[in-house]
Image (cartoon, rainbow, N blue to C red; front, side, top):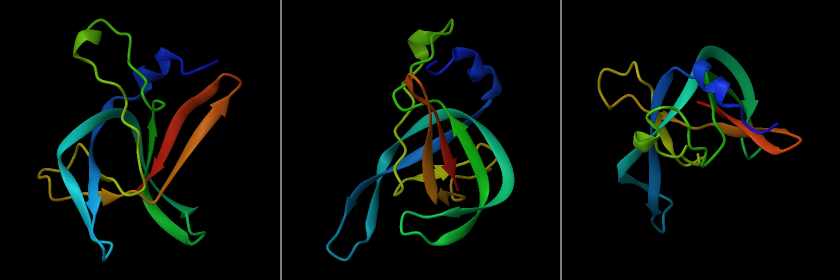
Length: 125
């Protein structure tokens, strides 16, 4: 069972994703001026997760999102865009942020699989 469109009914929030544009020779990241959005279920709960380097870090939010490149097949599909692919270097702005200055770095990303492939993404911020 690949991603079931009925799960979208649980994903009522929309987050804004700012993608990495470039990195200079010193490792400083420059972010793209364009952003993308993704529907997701946001769970505000502290969790301990491991980073890509194996370090244990506490996160504040867990986002449950459709798999990468999923295009919703709802009534206004003409206005829908594919779910972005999240990268560890991206930043996320939550929908309750009154201004765009409250951004959260991505700590870890996991993909949950079933027999047909990626079912959904879990993003820890």
